[in-house]
Length: 401
Image (cartoon, rainbow, N blue to C red; front, top):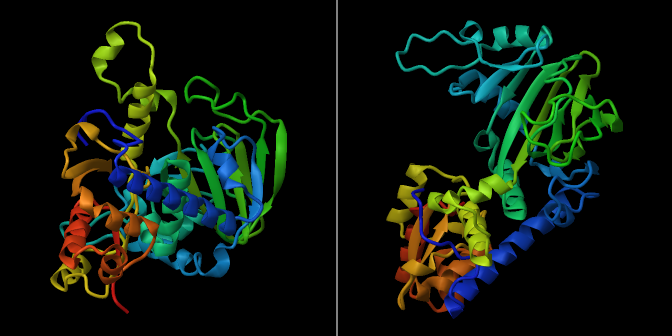
């Protein structure tokens, strides 16, 4: 998104911006509550208030109610048939404990000229049996809508970039060895079991290339994780794993990348840094708003389903709006008739009269007919709003049953 004017989290104190801001706050509260239900024993609200989640937390998970069903098969299909270029997948060497791009030597040979890179099933198996680990990055779109919903809830709760990574190994594969991440992670086993050890951090919220990358040898927690468990590891806490027995292990890792001070300051105009200055409240609100505005969600359907829905005037289609960063307003672009918002790394202009309909979409799954009845808005106005929001990627559609 191109550099934009001042971002505002509070809006212009008009009824329209207040209504949208309150609905976005309810959406975040709902996400926190769903996470609390998904991970009994973990307090996500407290974690969102502490940079680095404070301490590692072992929790159980209710994701076995269908969220993880079919995930192993989806991962297998993606490895064998997806386009894994651009480091979407890596092979973690057991000798070096480092990730390398998928080598063409284990890729599937195809005669088509535009074939993408993928993993030959039997050659990939040889790598796993040799003690190496297959890793998929940013894979949530390939793991089903329930996993995408989980990523959305984490993004809403933490106001953070969230992606779901996948690790597949066999036997005693060590993965990356002892290391710490510059983001919070939640480990969710899908199949098999591993023995995990978490060390005391070398520093609070350490920075890569400043603090040594390995472990500290001062264990604060260790134990076996299997399906039904979840482990929350704060940013900077070293950890390492060891496989158990001769079995295939598959686990998901939710990467939660919250902003650092540098992530926020880059949203200030460069000329501000030409001399010493102090941040005021407006600067901080702009930086936080700019960060929130670039957080993204992902669609649940493609252009075929969207075209079908539009041709039907969205009749019978359930939909919702998801703004991972919450409500961010561009007050300088607003006028008496319309307001402008920054969301999903884009900007959108909507009539102020559409604020009640937007609030309905933020509150949960609705049909156009339900929104029109609840707000008194003409159906055509609701459809216009849905198309405006859809054009910036924050409308999630469900096709009629």
